[in-house]
Length: 275
Ligand code: C2E
Ligand code: CA
Ligand code: CA
Ligand code: CA
Image 1 (cartoon, rainbow, N blue to C red):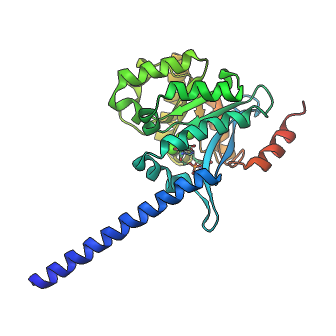
Image 2: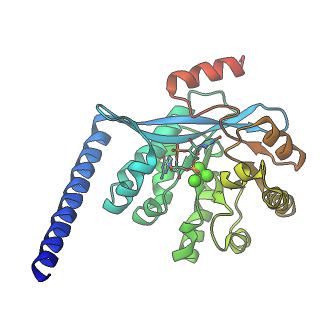
Image 3: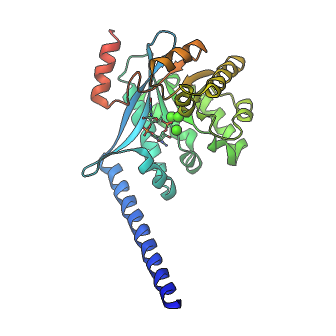
């Protein structure tokens, strides 16, 4: 009936209100969290495929919430992107990662994930330059990981900024390679230093011959274009053997190490480096 319909509509409306309210609350909390130092970086080793030696770490953000515990980025980065807070979070992440890396052995790099939204909202070249300047990290020890979603909207403008970032001496990696639509054309438009093959291919490779063929093709593409290839999400010895066989350059995944908090990272560095 008509009355029931209106009731349902009202219910829907108030449900929506409460969703919006909850989002606003979370956003407020997140803003506060950044101020209170509740955001932390964990670091996952990037390992040379040739000799198993770590060549650096990828910084992965977490929210150390006083009640909810360690909140993964999938639960607050999208919100930060919607609200614009990603600008402050992104600035913080770049600087904190650079600062952390200054305490590591000299030959280790730090890789930082860059949100496309952050890239668009800020003068990203200045942000990166300022972080290097403030922390004193040599530019070649910083790598920025971007996804191709960044290149879709204003490719010319983005490519120009990426060139300026590379001119600083920072390296640039394409993350989640293979999940988008036109990855190949972007590889020709911009000189990426590295391709990170999305972990879905690595996971599938254990069961699926087509996934193995795709991995083989990407590895040979890397060789042709002289771009480093990293495989992420490596979990088994079998995957390691296969990725070595097809000559991937770098491996990353739970098989080697999970993302480590600062304490565990210190232990990992001690165990793997003697100098
Ligand atoms: P990503 O950049 O593709 O990062 C890889 C994700 O896979 C990480 O999840 C990592 O913990 C997880 N992972 C690593 N090895 C394995 C493995 O062997 N098996 C499986 N199943 N998973 C593995 P995490 O830390 O939850 O991050 C998820 C996503 O959140 C990242 O995907 C990235 O897109 C985003 N993210 C993380 N940190 C940041 C950040 O500081 N800034 C921005 N803008 N985004 C971030
Ligand atoms: Ca990444
Ligand atoms: Ca990835
Ligand atoms: Ca991903």
